[in-house]
Length: 273
Image (cartoon, rainbow, N blue to C red; front, side, top):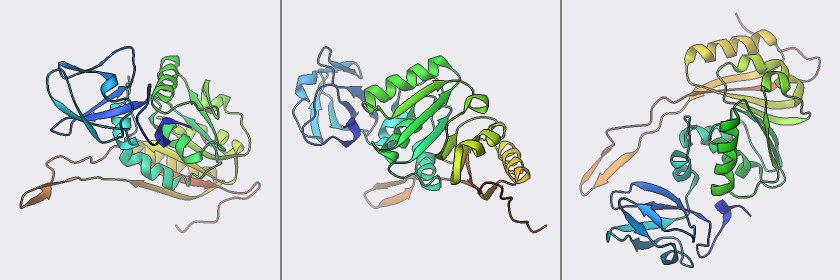
């Protein structure tokens, strides 16, 4: 069972999130070989092991920290990475609009730090299968390290080094999820590997990329239910009698475009001019 589903006392090698008095987050692992270095002080791992989540520990600087197992919204922004991750506000809609379900067979491309991979693995469960394509070996290695350290063993996950646009060769896939700059080059391969009714979902940062993708999907005529959306998220601040939006919000990060594969030999229905 992976770390995200653990209950009970905190155990060795688990990931934890520590929160200081200003609710700043610090990701760590309970490695018994070394203390947790944090804000100029240290916390002995033995002070955490065997305790339930939600305890308060103090560093050698006498600074208090709350300790929890990390939720995905806490884990993802704090992952070690060399490239931008897909943030929780987009991962949630990805899981919904891609209609992920336990047991699904999923292909993703553009692995990065492995943030989306962890969310996909949780959504499909142990009976599902995730195949991830990544061009860069260093990204592949980092993703595998992050998943191993902060998610847990994933025997149903395979990373392939290669170009999904030319190397994708799976069959009977339920979902294809792409975090690539030019996903329109993968439409042909995606159609071949998806089962009828399977969903292609693409994450793109700019509207010009989205326009190219939507035009390509419509020209292809073998996909329907083409939809594009973006998600805004604004947190609120409450203190005493004050209740107001926070000064900063997580505004545009990316667009989600989804489409459903038509049956073999079927062309998309005529569209209104």
